[in-house]
Image (cartoon, rainbow, N blue to C red; front, side, top):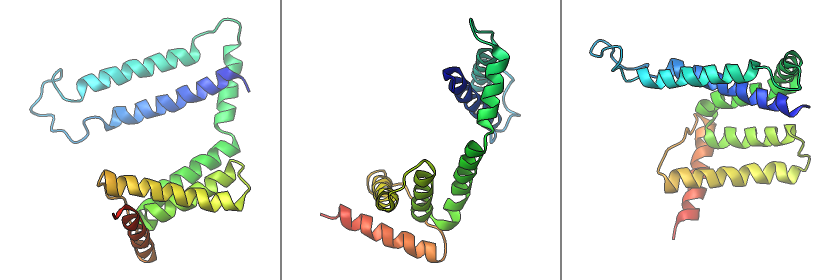
Length: 173
Protein backbone atom coordinates (compact mmCIF):
# COMPACT_ATOMS: atom_id res chain seq x y z
CA UNK A 1 0.00 0.00 0.00
CA UNK A 2 1.01 3.52 -0.68
CA UNK A 3 2.41 5.55 2.24
CA UNK A 4 0.09 8.36 1.24
CA UNK A 5 -2.91 6.08 1.76
CA UNK A 6 -1.87 5.43 5.37
CA UNK A 7 -1.39 9.17 5.95
CA UNK A 8 -4.88 9.78 4.56
CA UNK A 9 -6.39 7.17 6.90
CA UNK A 10 -4.74 8.93 9.83
CA UNK A 11 -6.11 12.26 8.61
CA UNK A 12 -9.65 10.84 8.28
CA UNK A 13 -9.52 9.46 11.82
CA UNK A 14 -8.15 12.80 13.02
CA UNK A 15 -11.02 14.57 11.25
CA UNK A 16 -13.56 12.31 12.98
CA UNK A 17 -12.02 13.09 16.39
CA UNK A 18 -12.13 16.82 15.58
CA UNK A 19 -15.82 16.50 14.68
CA UNK A 20 -16.59 14.69 17.92
CA UNK A 21 -14.73 17.28 19.99
CA UNK A 22 -16.50 20.12 18.16
CA UNK A 23 -19.89 18.73 19.14
CA UNK A 24 -18.76 17.83 22.66
CA UNK A 25 -17.11 21.16 23.58
CA UNK A 26 -19.25 23.25 25.91
CA UNK A 27 -22.16 20.83 25.96
CA UNK A 28 -22.98 21.41 29.64
CA UNK A 29 -22.53 25.17 29.82
CA UNK A 30 -25.34 27.66 30.36
CA UNK A 31 -25.07 30.02 27.40
CA UNK A 32 -27.48 32.71 28.53
CA UNK A 33 -24.92 34.57 30.67
CA UNK A 34 -22.20 34.79 28.00
CA UNK A 35 -21.84 36.90 24.89
CA UNK A 36 -20.94 35.11 21.65
CA UNK A 37 -17.21 35.93 21.87
CA UNK A 38 -16.78 35.12 25.56
CA UNK A 39 -18.51 31.76 25.71
CA UNK A 40 -16.20 29.05 27.08
CA UNK A 41 -16.57 26.89 23.97
CA UNK A 42 -16.02 29.64 21.38
CA UNK A 43 -12.22 29.60 21.00
CA UNK A 44 -11.81 25.82 21.24
CA UNK A 45 -14.38 25.51 18.46
CA UNK A 46 -12.56 28.11 16.35
CA UNK A 47 -9.34 26.11 16.76
CA UNK A 48 -11.15 22.84 15.92
CA UNK A 49 -12.67 24.37 12.77
CA UNK A 50 -9.21 25.55 11.72
CA UNK A 51 -7.78 22.09 12.34
CA UNK A 52 -10.65 20.51 10.37
CA UNK A 53 -10.14 22.85 7.42
CA UNK A 54 -6.42 22.05 7.46
CA UNK A 55 -7.11 18.30 7.42
CA UNK A 56 -9.61 18.60 4.54
CA UNK A 57 -7.16 20.72 2.54
CA UNK A 58 -4.39 18.21 3.26
CA UNK A 59 -6.60 15.37 2.05
CA UNK A 60 -7.72 16.95 -1.22
CA UNK A 61 -4.92 19.33 -2.12
CA UNK A 62 -3.25 18.12 -5.34
CA UNK A 63 0.13 16.58 -4.61
CA UNK A 64 3.06 16.72 -6.99
CA UNK A 65 3.56 13.51 -8.93
CA UNK A 66 0.49 11.62 -7.66
CA UNK A 67 -3.08 11.13 -8.74
CA UNK A 68 -5.21 12.67 -6.01
CA UNK A 69 -8.40 10.82 -7.00
CA UNK A 70 -6.67 7.43 -7.03
CA UNK A 71 -5.14 8.03 -3.59
CA UNK A 72 -8.48 9.07 -2.06
CA UNK A 73 -10.17 6.01 -3.61
CA UNK A 74 -7.45 3.70 -2.23
CA UNK A 75 -7.76 5.32 1.19
CA UNK A 76 -11.52 4.87 1.34
CA UNK A 77 -11.35 1.27 0.10
CA UNK A 78 -8.72 0.44 2.74
CA UNK A 79 -10.64 2.28 5.46
CA UNK A 80 -13.84 0.38 4.71
CA UNK A 81 -12.22 -3.02 4.20
CA UNK A 82 -13.67 -5.98 6.07
CA UNK A 83 -10.64 -6.34 8.34
CA UNK A 84 -10.73 -2.70 9.46
CA UNK A 85 -14.49 -2.76 10.06
CA UNK A 86 -14.16 -5.95 12.11
CA UNK A 87 -11.44 -4.30 14.21
CA UNK A 88 -13.65 -1.25 14.77
CA UNK A 89 -16.53 -3.55 15.78
CA UNK A 90 -14.35 -5.38 18.34
CA UNK A 91 -13.18 -2.07 19.86
CA UNK A 92 -16.77 -0.78 20.00
CA UNK A 93 -17.99 -3.94 21.71
CA UNK A 94 -15.13 -3.65 24.20
CA UNK A 95 -16.08 -0.05 25.02
CA UNK A 96 -19.69 -1.00 25.72
CA UNK A 97 -18.85 -4.20 27.59
CA UNK A 98 -16.59 -2.65 30.22
CA UNK A 99 -19.57 -1.29 32.19
CA UNK A 100 -21.31 -4.67 32.39
CA UNK A 101 -18.42 -7.14 32.36
CA UNK A 102 -15.96 -5.01 34.29
CA UNK A 103 -12.67 -3.55 33.15
CA UNK A 104 -10.50 -6.52 34.15
CA UNK A 105 -12.49 -9.24 32.41
CA UNK A 106 -13.42 -7.31 29.28
CA UNK A 107 -9.86 -6.01 28.83
CA UNK A 108 -8.37 -9.50 29.15
CA UNK A 109 -10.81 -10.85 26.59
CA UNK A 110 -10.37 -7.84 24.30
CA UNK A 111 -6.57 -7.99 24.36
CA UNK A 112 -6.62 -11.75 23.73
CA UNK A 113 -9.01 -11.44 20.80
CA UNK A 114 -7.18 -8.48 19.32
CA UNK A 115 -3.77 -10.17 19.65
CA UNK A 116 -5.17 -13.25 17.89
CA UNK A 117 -6.77 -11.02 15.26
CA UNK A 118 -3.42 -9.34 14.60
CA UNK A 119 -1.72 -12.70 14.08
CA UNK A 120 -0.48 -14.00 17.44
CA UNK A 121 -0.97 -17.79 17.43
CA UNK A 122 0.79 -18.84 20.63
CA UNK A 123 -1.84 -19.73 23.25
CA UNK A 124 0.69 -19.05 25.99
CA UNK A 125 1.07 -15.42 24.87
CA UNK A 126 -2.66 -15.06 24.22
CA UNK A 127 -3.30 -15.87 27.90
CA UNK A 128 -0.18 -14.50 29.60
CA UNK A 129 0.12 -11.07 27.96
CA UNK A 130 -3.47 -9.89 28.54
CA UNK A 131 -3.33 -11.11 32.16
CA UNK A 132 -0.03 -9.38 32.93
CA UNK A 133 -1.14 -6.24 31.09
CA UNK A 134 -4.41 -6.01 33.00
CA UNK A 135 -2.69 -6.61 36.35
CA UNK A 136 -0.19 -3.85 35.58
CA UNK A 137 -2.89 -1.41 34.40
CA UNK A 138 -5.01 -2.12 37.45
CA UNK A 139 -2.04 -1.69 39.76
CA UNK A 140 -1.29 1.70 38.22
CA UNK A 141 -4.90 2.89 38.33
CA UNK A 142 -5.93 1.47 41.70
CA UNK A 143 -2.72 1.71 43.72
CA UNK A 144 -0.80 4.63 42.17
CA UNK A 145 -3.44 6.96 40.72
CA UNK A 146 -6.31 5.92 43.04
CA UNK A 147 -8.75 5.81 40.14
CA UNK A 148 -11.54 3.26 40.22
CA UNK A 149 -12.31 1.40 37.02
CA UNK A 150 -15.64 -0.31 36.19
CA UNK A 151 -16.03 -3.58 38.10
CA UNK A 152 -19.04 -5.02 36.29
CA UNK A 153 -22.00 -6.80 37.81
CA UNK A 154 -22.90 -10.31 38.94
CA UNK A 155 -20.15 -12.87 38.54
CA UNK A 156 -17.98 -10.27 36.80
CA UNK A 157 -18.06 -8.15 39.96
CA UNK A 158 -16.76 -11.17 41.88
CA UNK A 159 -14.01 -11.62 39.29
CA UNK A 160 -13.05 -7.94 39.54
CA UNK A 161 -12.92 -8.20 43.33
CA UNK A 162 -10.63 -11.25 43.04
CA UNK A 163 -8.31 -9.34 40.70
CA UNK A 164 -8.42 -6.34 43.05
CA UNK A 165 -7.36 -8.63 45.91
CA UNK A 166 -4.42 -9.88 43.82
CA UNK A 167 -3.38 -6.31 42.98
CA UNK A 168 -3.63 -5.32 46.67
CA UNK A 169 -1.47 -8.26 47.71
CA UNK A 170 1.10 -7.24 45.14
CA UNK A 171 1.23 -3.74 46.61
CA UNK A 172 1.40 -4.82 50.27
CA UNK A 173 4.64 -4.38 52.04
